[in-house]
Image 1 (tube, rainbow, N blue to C red):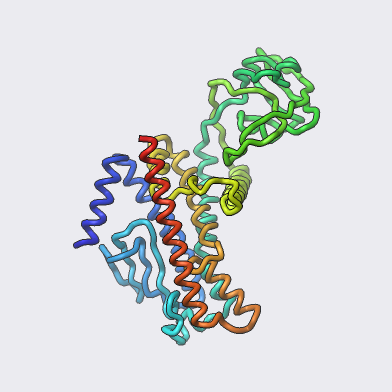
Image 2: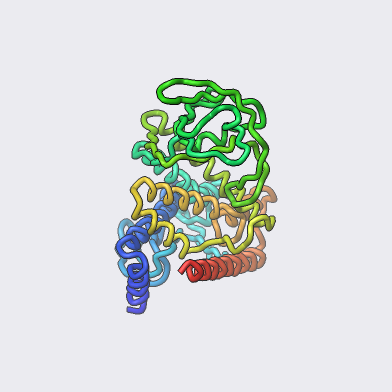
Amino acid sequence: MKSLLFLLSILAIGMYFYSFEFLITLLVISFLIFFHELGHFLAAKSLGVKVEVFSIGFGNALVEKEFKNTKYRLSALPFGGYVKLKGQEDLNPSKQVFEKDSYSVLSPLQKIYILFAGPFFNIFLAFLLFICIGFLGTLKPASVVGGFSEKSAAFEAGIRANDEIVSINGVLTPSFDTIAPLVKDTNLLIEVKRAGEILHFNVTPNIGEAYNDFGQKIQKPLLGIAPSTQRVMIYHTGLDSFSYAFKESLNTSSLILKGLLKLINGEIEAKNLGGVISIVDITSKASSISLSTLFFITALISINLGLLNLLPIPMLDGGHILFNLYELCFKRKVPPKAFEYLSYTGLALLLSLMIFATYNDIMRFATQN
């Protein structure tokens, strides 16, 4: 009864702030968790390991159905989930079961295969979502010049407002966001469409101050142009959708890893770290914009979930992969006491990060409102 009341409280608060979009957010988060755990589930099944529980959510089960010796649960705390494998004891290795259908009897490589499958499924899900986004299309600023900065290199070269930039050094620029990556500290041949006429300009960018993806000031070559208000729908269909999805998955993964390193190095302030409230806020707002935007945010969260689970922190998949790599290299398991202490330390670290991220979310939310 308490679990049901807790869930109803979450639904009431979410509906109050985000209306119907909150339900979509819950479905998105639940689906991401399901897909992650499905990876572990299928990998375990492929090795003949018994899956005792497959749960979406933590805490007491609201709904439970047993099928082929596995209990499938929908639990009260919706922001999480797990699969319980026979013989897998994260906090107490002394309770392992050494039977033929047990996780405990697997080799380190087989265990790594099961552990890696969850994060891999999240990254693969993002790849599939990017394919869908390619077919649905994304609305982006057109590659039309709307204005210029002071001492603009483009303006000095002869480019004017309302000119459409067709290509840079032979590479097509279908939207405004494709221009910046092509701007280098060298002479550029820019093809422009003006009143139906194709013109060519040689432009040498100026080095100026700009911001990177993390809001940090950097020096980079600039054309000194701003986009117009025109928008264009960009599609990626057929085989191009696979190339687009792979590139987006790779770029997103790289951005997340760079951001994590900058956070660890102190280049990005810890107050930028977000938690569940940020995820709910962003996803709920995205669902009210368009299906393509919702898919994009879901793909970002999915890759985040996959990569963060691979971090070498005990209690995460990456931590257990590290334990198994230790066994693989040194031909012996991590000592039980060390395993236990490291697991509790990892749990304490994760809980601390969750509390800190939630605090950041609350402070950010209070400031905005």
